[in-house]
Amino acid sequence: MLFLPASEKNGHLAFNDPPADFQTEDAYLVVSLDEACRRQQVGEAWFADISEVPRQAISMSVRQILKAKEIIAVVPDARKAQAVKRCIEAEISPMAPASILRIHPAATLYLDRESASLLSAATLAALAAAG
Image (cartoon, rainbow, N blue to C red; front, side, top):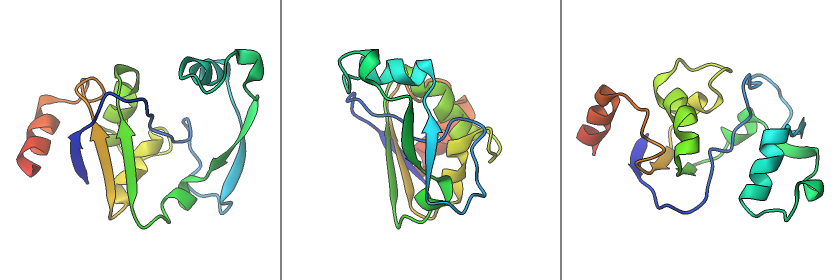
């Protein structure tokens, strides 16, 4: 994987919340959106009011995402720092859904300082050396 600084524009690590289903053969899943997710949609100006945000959505399964030839994730903002840390430093598991990106041969994450803020000094040094 290649890790580069990202712009400050909106974006998010769009992956199933833990625990993710790494095994399903279904390409797409109907998922329930919790209150925090629905409020995030309003906060990012996708909807004017929470009453407009659906309670369910269609999500691409992890296995379907991994079928892509190339995966590019732009992950700015401090609110994504914990997900970034789990993606890069945690064991690959359904409890860290984005960690599965580490097995993809062409996955690229673009991070800003805030989204990378919880990464260990050793990880940051390794990323800097990889260049």
